[in-house]
Length: 298
Image 1 (tube, rainbow, N blue to C red):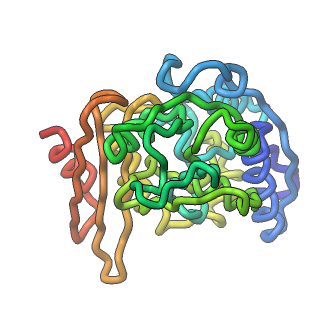
Image 2: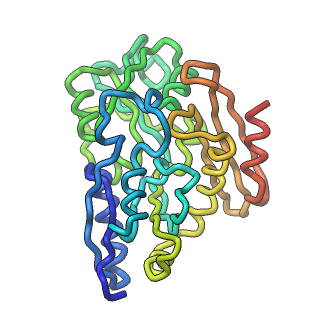
């Protein structure tokens, strides 16, 4: 492919890491590229939690619009931010490797209580704008106070550092990819089978125009099929429940060495409602999402 591939991305540090990673992967196969930074609704509206914002695609719509207009050739998304129903004419052409899918709780060391669950003191103020994280935290620690927090990873850490919160919850993938120095904090690494992450957390999705066959051929060389199989199950559960960023839903799927699939899911009717959890296993990924949804709706 002779022309440079134009990569659409948000401008946050993590989004730029994702875009530079994409450039590096393209360079390995001899393809040149350039970055085009696009501001999204989620970037502009910083005073509201996700559960208070209307619609879906807070971090994707403007990038998808640019892709539809032909202003860019590919959009690189954090797959967990991507709605499960794509605009007509756009497709997910490839997905990346999966970074650690778990959530981490980051605690100010002076607020640590070794005697409590997650080492978090009684009545601690925990920062998160995710309805999913709120519902699961209240499930394990109903005594805590939850407070919305927005901003990129460094901004959130600065708010924690300044004492606005006793702890915050972050995706392990973001902290890992940004190579953040976390030595001043206590880190609780949640097990994704217990504190269940967002569908496709830790995975990048490369989205293209359906008819742009040249770009699609390029990205098919980067596609990680094993990642795609399990994230398709997770996102299918989200789709069947008609969910988005506001839904208190966690879904995690993995395939074991014998080839069997295992899914863990957690769902609440609202962030402060009782949590329902499901574990389901199958020898095949076909209809696995439907089986999980049937169980969690009971």
